[in-house]
Length: 385
Image (cartoon, rainbow, N blue to C red):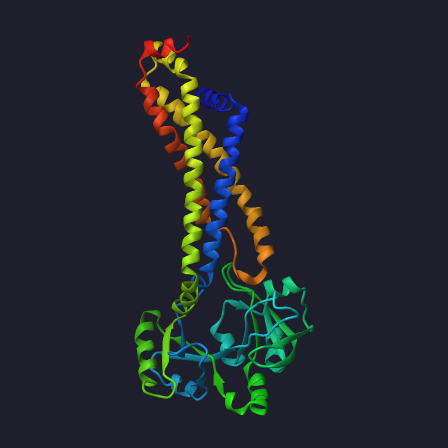
């Protein structure tokens, strides 16, 4: 307790300098945490993917559809337990700024493959019965203030025209990483409209979602599927849901690397600032450390004083920075809306923030502690004059 009081008094001997150093730490640690959370948000779709779902798409591009009759052939593949499909709708709600994912799906086969979507039974039934009905995630409904029975108009881009849907259900994610920012509509309703407007585009799907019996057989089942449609007019590329999501993340890989680099640079900069602070502090107390050694205190005691003071400042600044990250992340989440379906500060990020603060405190004290442990008592005492 005595040592802690001594460290606390030493740390705030120059209050302005210590407070400014702490402010720098708070800014650096909170920025580090926020940037890491942004990177985690990019990978949230990958982490939330299922190991028992595969995605089958055209091996040319996602923009090339697959025939609807592939569904029956996929069900016959060994290892496949469920088959469903979806199309990207790409409609605009009021303005282009209100972007959110919209998929036309086959509800009877699609919903059983996504048990992480928790939907009330009566809402599920209402959606299945209403071909113009839609399901949305809780986050999306809260953002726009939608309630059951509301009319949702979407201006088609891929599928021209104004489409009006009725909100029949709202799902809650089983876990925090479950995406709650999507809208699901009936694929059959979309397909019927295409048959009348553009028959050539009808009876085609964007991707197939395939359920498998054993996650370890994902690669084997993928090979069987792609081999089945090899040399056909619409060859396929089958991959795990995680790999499919990573394909989109990889498009922004350079940006993610830059964000991670910036987060580390911020920590290095504050490390240099704090090292300068501790060096100035040690130089000012040169005579005090020499006196302690003259009174019989070991060099190790002097080292503990310097490291203790540095770690105390780093711990207070790091803890404050961690606490500040939480409201910052909440404000950022509100600002970006559905751009990041899952945006939360993970326990790993908070642990890394505290670790970064302690590393800064340790490295900043290393040089002055080594110098002060080796000072000559006579030279140090002369420093008084």
